[in-house]
Image (cartoon, rainbow, N blue to C red; front, side, top):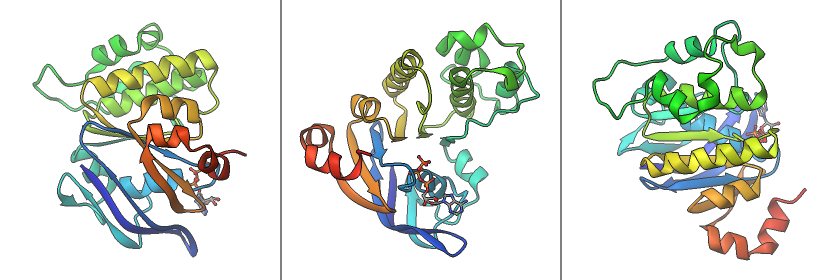
Length: 232
Ligand SMILES: Nc1ncnc2c1ncn2[C@@H]1O[C@H](COP(=O)(O)OP(=O)(O)OP(=O)(O)O)[C@@H](O)[C@H]1O
């Protein structure tokens, strides 16, 4: 469903991603693991077109999207949850969701009510200004907002970072149930437990280079690799 081939990405003159290649099949949850600053967010931004690659190609559902504008990628079905959890602080929770709503006739589509059924804590704070939410509430809201665009592929950038263990568990359960609905997910994580618990396959990125690719079982068994690239 998604294929990156030989992607090189820069911030100005800084060369950040080196020859990154990865694939995600339809229906899979694939995790991208790596330490702080390894290049996870830059990979996500490259896929979404916010920091497009200088070299290499990105193909999504058979279409070359390497140079496509971000909003057009969203229209193709790519949903993006950035790691900064930026919500519209002056708008209410409900308004944050409504502002991205796209009309659609199907009962399968995400609307505000479905997001509230999916994340019940949000329903209780529909009228609250989003600038006053806890970290966990903000994360639910940013995921809910991405779902409102009815993606078939979700880029999730470190959704559990800095959240309390109970909230992390709840989010992991909800990501698992998104997988059950058939959504394909690329999950960037530093939290190995969460990523290994959810994903079918994984990649490890280090200093902008993909160092490892394999099944979750292989990754769990390979303590040497995890020590070398993931432990701080
Ligand atoms: N806007 C920017 N301009 C210049 N360099 C940047 C910029 N954003 C990130 N970098 C650098 O790019 C490298 C990769 O950062 P990136 O955010 O992709 O890592 P990450 O794996 O997502 O880590 P984190 O968990 O910290 O988000 C780092 O060395 C970082 O300092």
